[in-house]
Length: 67
Image (cartoon, rainbow, N blue to C red; front, side, top):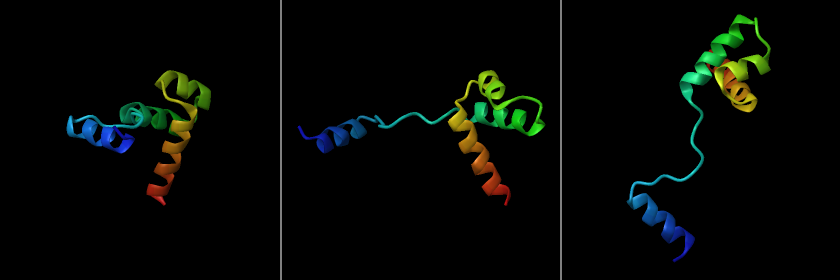
């Protein structure tokens, strides 16, 4: 079975490939903490349980939406 055939078979069974997306609620909470400007990025990431990369990506997305 080729890779493409295997992926097609998995999709037909309702399986989706790829890495799961970050939890939106956690990112929104982290962004709320970021806007308060009271905690460091490391503290925000630890408290909200999100990665630094995900937080910075979310911050950039929010800035593009508001501009």
